[in-house]
Image (cartoon, rainbow, N blue to C red; front, side, top):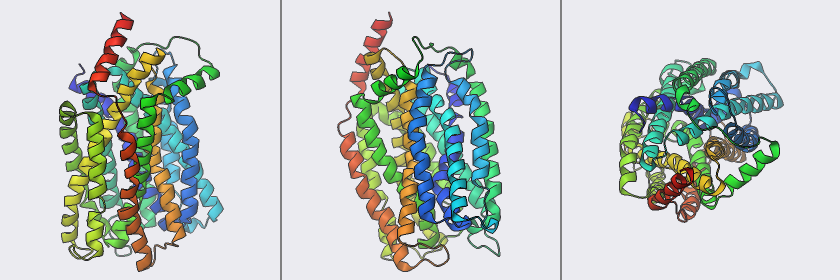
Length: 465
C-alpha cells in the first residue's frame, strides 16, 4: 500500500497540466479572439491542427516511454525533458498584443506554433506521469484513491490559475470594467503560469524518482515497427475501444461547453472579472467534495455505474441555469445575488463532473492489466497517452468547434447582438446536453467490473509465479 506521502508526491505532477488545461479551456480562445484580434475561426483551426499533431505524438511518446530502460527508470527521462518546451511554448503563446499589428496569417502561425510546442511538452510530461501512477499500485480501490488525489491537485492548480487571472491580473480597472479584456494583463499571467508549471514538474519528478527506478524494465526489442505494432495491439483492445470512444464523446461535449463559459459569464450573465472570481471558492469546495466521495462510491458501486450516472446528471444540471436565465427566472444579471444563485448549480454539476474524471483515470489502469494479460506487456504509456489525448480533445477539439461557432455567427466582443448571445446559450445549454447522449450509450457496454478485474489480477499473479 502506498503511503499518503507517496500519493501526494505523485499527485503534485497534476499541477502543470491542471494549469495548462484551465488556460487552454477557458482563456485561450477568448484571449486570441477578443484581446489579440485573431478571427475565431482561424483560432479554432489552429487548435484543431495542434490536436491532429497530438493524435500522433501522444501514443508514440507513450509507447517509447514503455520501452525505455535507463538508470532513472522508464518514465523519468521524459518528465525532466519536458520542462523546456512547456515553459518556452507557454510564455510565447500568451505574449502577442493587438498593438503589434500582426496580420491574421502571422497571428495564426504564432498561435499554431506555440500551441504545438506547449502541447508536445505536456505530452512529454503528462503521458509518462499518468502511466507511472498505473504502475506503482495494482489495487483496484487504491488506484481510485491515487488518481482521486491526482485529480484533486489538478483541479486545485487550475482553480488557483483562474484565481490569479480574475483576482490579480484581470481585476477591474477604470479603463476596463471587465478586466479580462485588458491587453496588459495577459503576458504577466502567462509568465506566472509557466513558472509554476516548471517548478512543479521538477518537484514531482524528483519526489517520485525512487518509485520510478524500482519498476520493471522493458523486455524485448525496440524498433519503430514494434512500437507501432504494440500501439495497435493496445488500442484495439475491446474494453479500451469502448472507454476511448465514450470518453471522446464526453470530452468533445465538455470541451465545447467549457470554452463558451467565459463568453456566457461575460456577455449573457454580464458579470465582471471580480464577480467571476467568486465562483472559484465553490470550485474548490467541489474538488474536495469529489475527492472525499469518489473512493467511497467505488467501494459501493461499479465504476461503470458511477460514470453513467455522472453523465446523466451533467446533462440535466448543465442547461438548467441558462434556461432559467433566458426566461428571467434568476436574480438580475450582473449582480452578486446571481453569483450566489449560480453557486448551487456549480456545486452539484462540477462535483459530479470531477468524480467522473477521477473514476475514468483509474479505469485506464484497470484496462492496462487486461492488456497485459492478453499481450504479456505492460503498456500504461500507450493507454494513458490516449487518456491524455482525450483531455486535449476537451481543450482542443471542443475549443476548435467553439471557435467555428463564433465565426459562423460573426460574434464580436465589442457589441454582440441578442441573437448572437442566444445562439451561444443555445449551444451550451442545448447542444452540449444532447451530445452527452452518445457517450452514455457507449459506456453502457463497458464491462470491466470489480470481479473481472480480480480474476485478471489472479491470472497475472499466477503467470508471474
